[in-house]
Amino acid sequence: MISTTGNAPPPAAPSGPATDLMLTVNEARERILAHFSPLPSEHVPILDALGRVLAEDVIAPNDVPPFDNSAMDGYAVRAADVQAASDDRPVMLAVLGELPAGATTEQPVAANTCYRILTGAPLPPGADSIVPYELTDGVAFGGWHGAAEAATAIVAQRAVRVFKAVKYDDNVRHAGEDQRQGDTILARGTVIRPAEVGVLGSLGRTSVAVVQRPRVAILSTGDEVVEIDRPLAPGLIRNANSYSLAALVRWYGGEPLMLGIAADTVESLRELLWRGQRADMIVTTGGVSMGDYDVVKNILAHDGDVSFWSIDMRPGKPVAFGTLLDVPFIGLPGNPVSTMVGFEILVRPALLTLAGHTRLAKTSIRARAAHRISNRSGRENYMRAIVSRDGDEWVAHLTGEQGSGILTSMHRANGLVVVPRQTTRIEQGESVQVLMLDWPSME
Ligand code: AMP
Ligand code: MG
Figure (cartoon, rainbow, N blue to C red):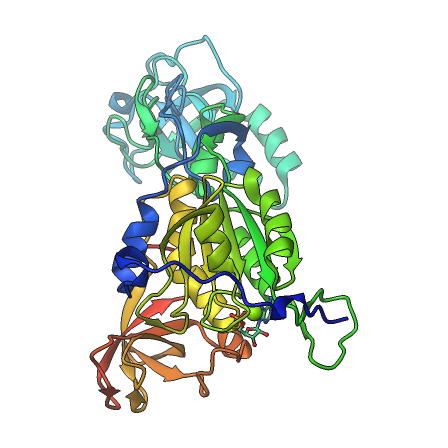
């Protein structure tokens, strides 16, 4: 069923210097970012910290490794004892016993004695270096086969011949050589990657303070938009945008809050938007262009604060920004590509700021244009492109038809070629800037 209430003309949008202004993309982004700062922190299990921003300095409670240990399978010796060892004149050492990883001993390595030792086992007292077993006549250690046989041989082994000298400290890993007790190992603001999860584990941390995940309320608007599980009827289209937006929110570390689809009436929009109050940001799609049914900006003007609603960019010129019920509000246009590109360029940096990130720019590379590119829009144009490798350079092919309704162009693309507003034509072979859609931020 199609609501007709949206046909009533919405209240006239207020005009004035601040709202009539057509901002550049950078100006718009700066205005938006001025409204955002990092959220408070919460404690989460270390694995759940993946991709999030550390909200505490992590200090080593002990040395890592906690003790001097062997870096090789071999014999723990006193280097001085084997100084003269050679193939012709091996040095014979008495084997005091075996130290697998996890074993310790109090008995010191005295002159001309040694311990058989495995990688990671603590260095026994008195020993100062490790002779790898390859430099001895010692029995090979377990490996894939024969562990039991080797173990029997070890028990039987009373002495070993060493064929080569080692230097003091050879093959010894020192306590604290990775992390020193009391040092700040991970600083607040660090983005947690798999390596940082491992480091936290090595420090015995089970949970850690990270910046909270931003909650982003998502509302689609339009009398013609129906939920994706509803049958289509003439004139209706499926609500793709709530899903692409929610996916982008998740992709960049936020929590989407689906508010549904509002009809093009002030009442319907108001009712659903009110539910966005508990979010850290509200993002809407549709209802911000110049058409008669575009009521989003009017709600913003009457119930909140409008900062601007026009940006010198394509796709996505009509973008409303302001606050509604004190929650920052970004109204993106309804065309599915405009929605996604608008999110990447304007919402993503705000979301990342809330989540505590400081690297906000998308990774950008220089690529060679595979063909001529025209920009008749007179605006900063973000064109969907496929970037691939050609020898030692990147080459950018546009995905074809750049209409802002062609959502599959986003599916085909891995980058957005940025064509500056003054540039009307880029010739084949010229260098272009490309924002990579799915590369992690590097700067
Ligand atoms: P609007 O910005 O409301 O004028 O919408 C521009 C175009 O985007 C129209 O063709 C809408 O039908 C389409 N559109 C609006 N909202 C959505 C949505 N949630 N999912 C898919 N297409 C939409
Ligand atoms: Mg609409």
